[in-house]
Amino acid sequence: MSVKPTVLKLGGSVITNKEKTLTPRLPTIERLAKEISRANISPLILVHGGGSFGHPLAKRYRIKDGFNGKVSQLLGFAKTHEAMVALNKLVVDALIKEKIPAVAVSPSSFIMTKSERIHSFPFEPLTKLLQLGFVPVLFGDAVFDLDKGFTILSGDQLIAYLAIHYKAERIIVGVDVDGLFTGDPKANKEAKLLNHVTLKKLETLMQQIGEAKVTDVTGGMLRKIQEMIPAVEKGVNVLVVNAAESKNLYKALKGERVVGTVISRS
Amino acid sequence: MSVKPTVLKLGGSVITNKEKTLTPRLPTIERLAKEISRANISPLILVHGGGSFGHPLAKRYRIKDGFNGKVSQLLGFAKTHEAMVALNKLVVDALIKEKIPAVAVSPSSFIMTKSERIHSFPFEPLTKLLQLGFVPVLFGDAVFDLDKGFTILSGDQLIAYLAIHYKAERIIVGVDVDGLFTGDPKANKEAKLLNHVTLKKLETLMQQIGEAKVTDVTGGMLRKIQEMIPAVEKGVNVLVVNAAESKNLYKALKGERVVGTVISRS
Image (tube, rainbow over all chains, first blue to last red; front, side):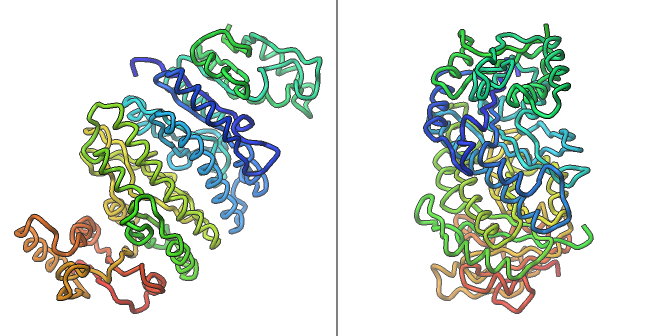
């Protein structure tokens, strides 16, 4: 590609109601499709999370732990993947409605992991798709694993991998909070938003959290960001924004000022 | 695989109403899922056609002809693929309801064609899926093409390719007529069902049709069967049955006597 792509993640907590199984936030999905259409960024690679579609099923059937040899778990894997296909369809349909040539790209159909990490990734169709001007829409998925039979591949691991391979211009991560805080903003009002975090600062934060061990004080955000480190090390900046609020994603895509957290190499 | 798989095609004319755009035959899909579940064949590879989901859109946007450089056609490709995903979802959901661990496998996510013929096909995830005991469900799809940008990959080309790669036990093709006739059974009451056709006989039939040129007198069936020839040459028998009628698919899967056409090497 002559122009470096933008890699955009739409968090499962933004596009679904995480409190209710299999419940999409349709008005939010439609609004985000409009913002993406209006920003008109190309090339664009989209990845979304599982939220209340993938997570409850993956947890119930312990998909991440790998195949336990029981037929009932095979059916659990099938249901988990199909729930993600259903959510993906809602996202793709909303994008197509906004005249974005969005194409569902199904991770389990081509990506293999080895002990939960991406092991093989045939890039040919995805590269062709981007060259032609399509917007691929991938998702966190139940995938096949060389060691464990199957597992869960997170959307976060996927975006870092894609950003590195395609030498992305940037990664934008749309979540339901304003960015990375010093604590969990949903539980702790004292938590402060970090506007800019370097790799060095991130290491310090992770050590502090490593000492606490039991819970991630940032409300799970730091663990997500940890997946981005390999891409940040290669010079890809990550911008975490609150996509649950109107216009933030549009501003982020257009490079306008927006509340959020930037993670950069230095 | 220690046991040779059965490759099963469900024709678009069986699972959709070809007269009405985007209209599935849900009771038929549910009945077929029950018959497949009851027959309990493993390993099983399932492929379905497009019927009134894929075909009208593919035709309107001339997807088979390749990319014409216009943005409107990109959107047409996106719509065609998404219509196929929608039909696939109906089939997979029906199978899961019958406790079959069915997993949607999306051709455009991993298969590339070159001038409409399969060029690259990374088999690793599909092989793993079969080894674990899942039933993959593929479909005729809008795919990316090395020469033309994109094109249509038919379910018929796909089943022959899969049958050869996995040294299939057999191919079963479920259609909405009783098999291959000497004419079009829907238009010509004199048309006679051919119970057994060898490769040699098939060549003769194709020459006769080649002379007629304009239309396929068998109602399109011979053209479908033509795609199977490479698999038949390798010794894979093809059985064409009427899956629109109850119990035929079950009987075919179980190897019981059923009205239809067998195509064999000799």
